[in-house]
Image (tube, rainbow, N blue to C red; front, side, top):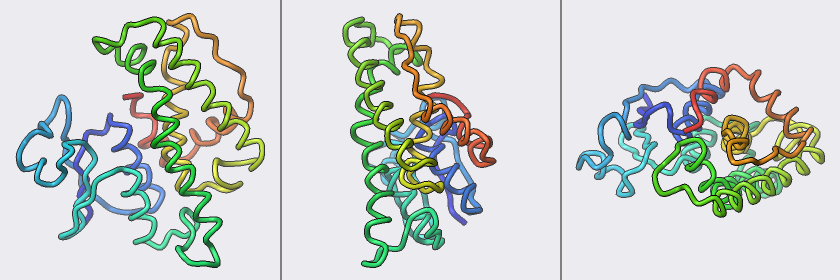
Length: 216
């Protein structure tokens, strides 16, 4: 059985839990990370030299990097509705899903990091008003991209129907909705397609079970 190492409040762990729920993949889970067993433990570091959660263990196979884990699970369990086949016939559809998965890990994440650490986590050292304002501006710009894409698909981020890309992107949108940006005097832009998308995601059983466990 698949084993997942990581605490449920981690957004990257929640990606994997959400995916498992969508695919009916059974698993066991162990709490690792801040507040639980330290990822500096040599046993954990031997599995992931980055000392970050999640890590999954599938028999004798160990894998880290949450978005890679999502791809692995969808491919292993032949959920080609979530991630199209890796062949010439489905190359464009698969690339579109992977494009948004990769975008979440790079552009989207980079935009919100400072503002989120300041306003949601209230982490020491994240108290520069100028950097908070810049991060919120960049974050809103990324959400505008999502809103525009959703207007094109009429449904989800990579296509009309739900795909694997909606898990990482959807959790990023959830983080936006839950972060008190108003505390920095920021007015949330009106993104109607984004709001409809978020409302749609929050009705999914897998999101209800695992997506909304926090903003951390």
